[in-house]
Length: 90
Figure 1 (cartoon, rainbow, N blue to C red):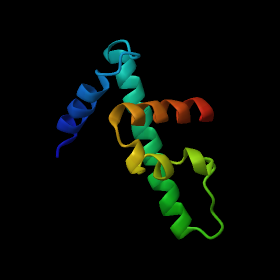
Figure 2 (figure 1 turned 180 degrees about the vertical axis):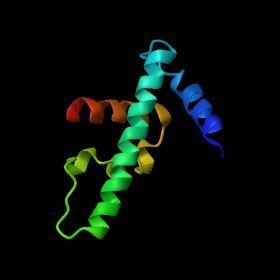
Figure 3 (figure 1 turned 135 degrees about the vertical axis):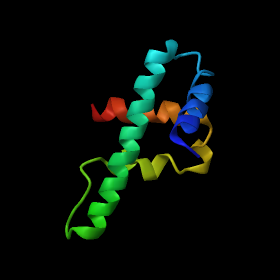
Figure 4 (figure 1 turned 90 degrees about the vertical axis):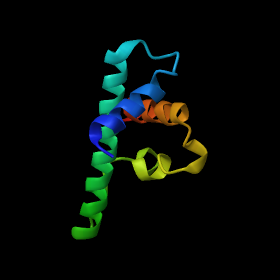
């Protein structure tokens, strides 16, 4: 699937959230979700390649520990969890 189609699908899902006002807010949230995913991928790689490396992101906020949970797979629940992570980290 190409990136443009993926982003469009995600935006369509995010439009269902009544707590999000406008595309500018959705784009900001989407960027944070991409950021959290990329950071987690990099952390996983560093954990494999560097002895003693431990992610600076607390375990409960790591992408792999909440985004992959089947009970949390509904897009609006997922979006809420991303907000919680960003607020806790920053």
